[in-house]
Length: 239
Image (cartoon, rainbow, N blue to C red; front, side, top):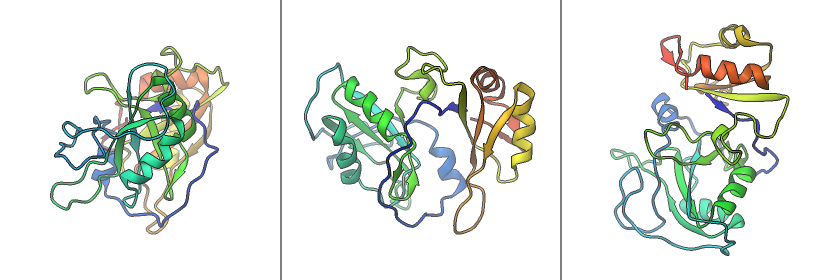
């Protein structure tokens, strides 16, 4: 479960038809693995190996920062990601993991920017925007064992609601297809009033996509996140 409230939703990109994705794709999409490169050298799924390639102008502001980019359309390429993120600084690395058996994109990628300042701007401007017809997620990638690179840990000194907004939108992932809005509301209302609960569905099949957004007052949302994260609902542990 991730605090989504502090990210910009203003930008839009060209759309392509929504692709059907398996439940395993959506689950894998939230694992926040590490990144790689735009070069053709061999890479593992965590991005190790390969080289680097520049793009845009270096704007200073510290060491390189690797970003996780999730919920990508299968048609999105490394060139597309490099072009988009180069607006905010020097892109030194782009990596799109592929499935071993099918060589199909796995629906997420990694972009490395040369400075923290440019990376934080990219997160602010790109997270929850449309790219090739999908609402992408952009967070700082963190090594395994340090927890998900969620927005509540970035850029604001680690506080849950650094901008001080009265309401906070939580991302609720790894949902069962059997979980409905009423079930989620009943779970979160234990910790405060739920002002909005939205379960996206696949446009072609009408099937739930395995995640949802729940909006609550900031203080209630913080408690709900700590209580509900990892809780089992309809046979699946919430993330």
